[in-house]
Structure formats: C-alpha cells, structure tokens
Length: 303
Image 1 (cartoon, rainbow, N blue to C red):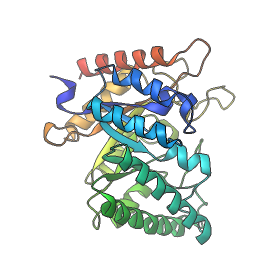
Image 2 (image 1 turned 120 degrees about the vertical axis):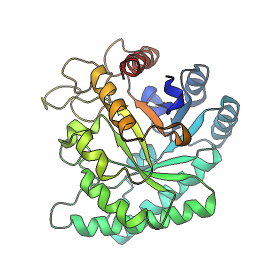
Image 3 (image 1 turned 90 degrees about the vertical axis):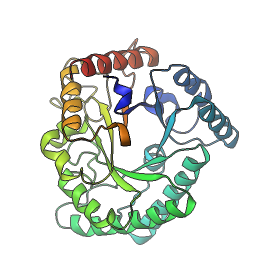
C-alpha cells in the first residue's frame, strides 16, 4: 500500500537547511531543491524576513503542488516570544508576534500553522500558565479564522531535558486541547516522535490522550542519555545515529500505532514531517534528507 494514500510526507525546510532558520540566507535556493524532489508531498516552512523572498517562496510553492505548513518556532525562539507568560506585556508581545507569523503563513499559502507554549514556570505556577496559554490560543484561533481557513496545531515539546516547555507532557497538552478545541474546530496538536524519549513517555500511552482532536505528526531523533554528548538534547540528528533514541524500527512502530488508531487515513490525511538536520562534519543537507527518505521507505515497507 502506498504511503501517500495515508499521509502527506513532509520535510521541515529550516531544519534540513539550518542556515535559513533565522529567516535569512539561501531560502529560495534550498526550497527549490526540496520542490524538485517528488518524494515530498508536504513542506514546513518558517520565518522569511525579506518581502521579495517571501513572494518568490509563495510562487514556488504554488507551482510545486506541495501541501504547505508554517512553523512559528523560528520566529518565536528568535524573538523570545512567550504565549504562556504570566507577564501581561510579555504575553501580548508574544501574541502579536505570532499573529505576524500567521499573516506570513497565509501569504505563502500554508493550510497548517504550528504554535507552541513558553517555558514551564514550575509546579506552583503551571496551572495558571496553562490558563493563560489557553487564552492566547483562543485569541489566535479567532484571528486565524478571521484571516482564512488554516488550522493551528500545538506542538508538544519536552519539559525537563532541553526546551523545558510548559507543553510539555501529553497530559498537559490534553488539558489545553480540552479547553480550546471544543470551541475552535481549527485547533489540534502535533506529536513529534523525537520528543517522546525526552518526555519519558511512550507513544502508545501518550497519543490516546490527545487523538480525539485533529493531529499532525513529526518524526525525528534525539540524543539524551549523556548530557556531555555534543548532540545532547532536542537537536534533531539523523535517524539511526550512534547513541540516538530513534531508529528505523521506532519509525515503523510509530506508523503502526497511528494506523491502528486510524490517525493515518485516506479520507483525512495528516502531514507527517521529517525533522532532521546536518550536525556533524561532512553531513550535508542532501545526505541527511536522503537518509531520512530511506528510513521512511524501509519503515513503511515493514508496517
């Protein structure tokens, strides 16, 4: 059975080409390399600072036929935006910054937009921060609906290892979804295979907490057992790397789980984006993407 019957297979542009993560650099040239490869049926783009380049990207994506997603992470991390801040001024700055990202997403033709929480404030203030985050998300859902018909997906990060985000564990993600999704049908979550080890959670236990609402997915890898390792944390190294947590068999099992739970289905295909980047000497973007494609092909063949 064809993988494309069950999902759109995407690549995170600014991870495959990390030199563009801050919204500058060879954005158009690197995008062309992805567009020319018909393995990919979706793409996740990020911050594009230059208006002219943004228009070039829009034209290229229109021609490509790719399903376009937009990630606010580069903008959020680059500008230190925080949608769950307990400081009203800081939270307002976060909301306004993400709204600019949503406008940019529509300009390049995105139908899915990724959003994320700020840092976890600790046990005493976590519930208050979740309520504030919910208020931010509702405002953004409303803004998105007024602006067009794209969906917002909350990406679930780690709490203790690297990003140390409010969302955070899947139980907290479920709490937020339960407060937002019943009011806004354009809101869901994004589960990243590389984050389960960092969270200390298993996909088969975590996914059922959130899968009654719309979902998209990432697959990637991490290194977390030795904090002294140069690639420690949420850095998205290639699959099957020594000391890494995600191997081809883990991608296969993830596919199986999502199929069993009917989260991969022809009538409502989700996006499954690969999030890997060249990190070591002599690792090129082209080699990393080719290796990811081999992993996907092998994992799907074994489903």
